[in-house]
Image (cartoon, rainbow, N blue to C red):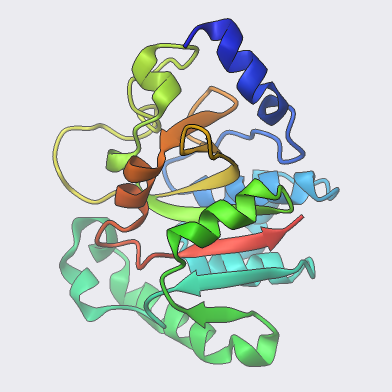
Length: 231
């Protein structure tokens, strides 16, 4: 596929209502995704304001859901685990703050219903990812293993400055899990490709095959977390 063909196919996603905003540190990718979502929904915000509001540097998906609820948008948080998993205590990505995080996260899950944070305990089927995105009425914040992201544009050298999305903030040197948030903004059924914003990537949008995305979002450590937001 030539560059001109790609622009014809994906030019509309460059100007999607959800803008591209880059994260500042190795912990605020989720806040960058919330900032993108808010701006796309007409609310001016920035990562610094959200960081002050949330008051955390170890951020779980339930934290993002409660932050998003403050703005009264229509969304559903899907996860296969209601709360924390004790085995994450020994996972390098989680271990430093796990004990402190566990108390907060479990408390938030317990209070979610009373706080009108809609959580569905299930692994969202791939067909629903495609359905939500194809009609262009939704965007989806997804927790993935950054090491498994394989952007088609990056791999082909068509505009990205990295061979693997997220390389700006993460050293790809071993097989350890690295939790990372991205926003899916579209789906191309002709090529079975998802289009997404990666806050760790300078490029304004990335593309990934269904197979590669499915691996990244089902990796051990993600709990299949995603937040589907109605635009």
